[in-house]
Image 1 (cartoon, rainbow, N blue to C red):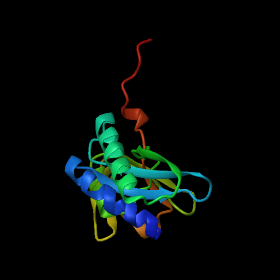
Image 2 (image 1 turned 120 degrees about the horizontal axis):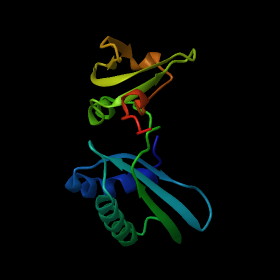
Image 3 (image 1 turned 30 degrees about the vertical axis):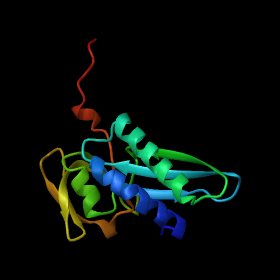
Length: 157
């Protein structure tokens, strides 16, 4: 749950992100100290390039300074999520449609396959054999993007 300050920052960054076709995934403000960390995680299908990250950083920095939201100095970090970012919503599954996913279950089991989308909190994962698994997100411990090493081109010997 975002704090009131994080919600204010989200309101400032949202129009900038929308203009660039980017989704704001998370806003976090580190507590304490004279040099607080403001972290904004953004993404879009196909990824976010450095120019978009820089544009968001410049725009949000100007807005935050104009609004004087944080007393004193702060560090602003705009980044995109890594492979280990947990998929938690239909928007996440849509953003990463067709990508290879790793599903971790509470009992330690693992399943990998292609993301075939989500409907009503149930997502479809197609394994390498072409079998489709319909999985309730609530039944998982974590779902994240992964690399399908078997599909990677083999190096020359």
